[in-house]
Image (cartoon, rainbow, N blue to C red):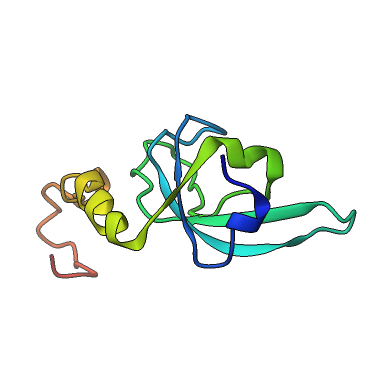
Length: 114
């Protein structure tokens, strides 16, 4: 099990259970480590392989403040293993939103060339 002394800025962690609306297997890099105003230790992750969602509201690539009890849900990843895991988690290429596809009116000006 990880302890707070194992966590430093730039370390890579993998979520081993679904938690806080995030799927298991998600990989993140420790972005910030510190103590909050009450003196409680926390860390923040930046998710590297977050799956594209179907939500209409945008979701963040950043985690909430995670605390020492949350470390039980993470495994540390070596840098060499990281590249292999990220390649495995790649999904199919993203497509254009449906509102950008389709046939436009012939007199409609296009903002972007696709």
